[in-house]
Image (cartoon, rainbow, N blue to C red; front, side, top):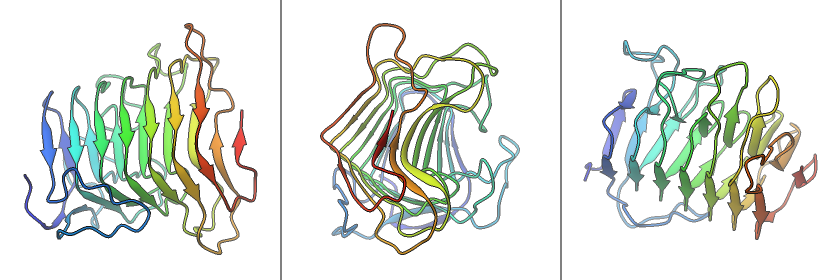
Length: 239
């Protein structure tokens, strides 16, 4: 278990089958974010600071079978590719380090261009987290056929509280689909029982779930159901 405190650094997890527990392990923050224990806060205020990845990403998951449970992860940058948590590669667009079979749960994740960015990686679960105020998309499941042949399959986004919090920029609560190129396969994507809202007064356009271009070509459909969506200027769901 990682002790409570503030850790101002970039973290790269590249050892497979590792479990990292914070002081609020197994405690769902819900939409209030109130928890009984002090938080272990991972943040980066100094930008890129290591030789592994050059973007201002707070926490990188670049191995298989990682569990992250009970942390707070923050990012103060709005620059392209500067996200709070990246799953898949040492940087956005990395083809050499896919990251499959990971779980992020019971975390509070704030800021960044995106809160969580899943890049060309499969069988990941994002569950029971509180996500707040990303500049663009809160949770992104992305692929690009111009960047290798890997697909993003069987990813699950479950029981999260996702709040744009009035950040004045175009964005989505959850986005699944291409960043460019021709069709890729997002089969098995499950988006279920999330609360997605915009509690602030920002003027930016915001859509709850955008699955436009999220093909399910290998037999299992992209499934979206049981979600609660409110306060959107661009509609709740686009498919």
